[in-house]
View: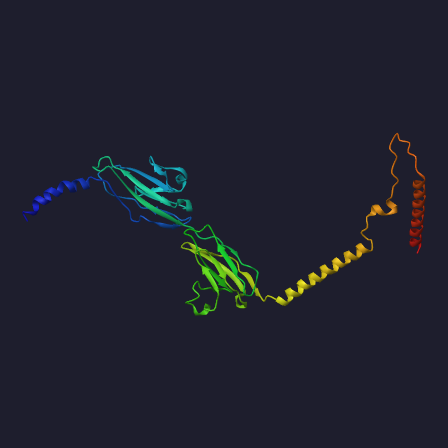
Length: 313
């Protein structure tokens, strides 16, 4: 017993220094809360001899530090939705996703041997997923690949996805589930992608997707996907019909050309015009030109007579 007294004497100065040092603790250094709810960030002074220590709260998000509580008052948007509780703890009301960050409680105690201490609180604000956007093909031929997509960007933590056909869940693992061993699909719960590598008639149905995280879930509306047989005979018949129509059109155009329906109108007598004489030139016509003009005039009169006779008929 006498041998232990010198050791106690040596420890007393160290214990005295510890008792004179400000020290902080917390009941929860990683609180989790859902969006729009209130949360308390616990900061407790475990020991101090300073009667009125200075309290500060800081927010650290994306590498940037800003004041939450400084000079005995709330700062920024926290002024209307936060308060100090029990001397040092911070209460945030109506939390948002932007409140997810690291919060640092700092206490300065000038009368203590160790005058400053701090503690970090990691706050996570969970956000429920919004209705996911689902993309489902309306019709797919038998044996072809079909891709269905489901995604949403608002939830925190990130959502996982599950697919349903006719309100029944599709298993992500088709190998271990005997009900889906004959299925040819693969489902990725992280990306929300459902791929049928070779669809069959049994894959026809109403498909929906649910996005889920720790804060809740959201579901998109059901969409119909039809799997139909590919009619090869009908496709070949349709191609032959199109070819036949094109051949008939080509023959018709050729016949029209042969009968003169597409002849150049400049060659017809009705559009013929005698060249005008240039100004200031006394143009003398030859006998051949006079005979040609008389012959052309006679043809035009006959043409008009035939036209009038055709109208009367």
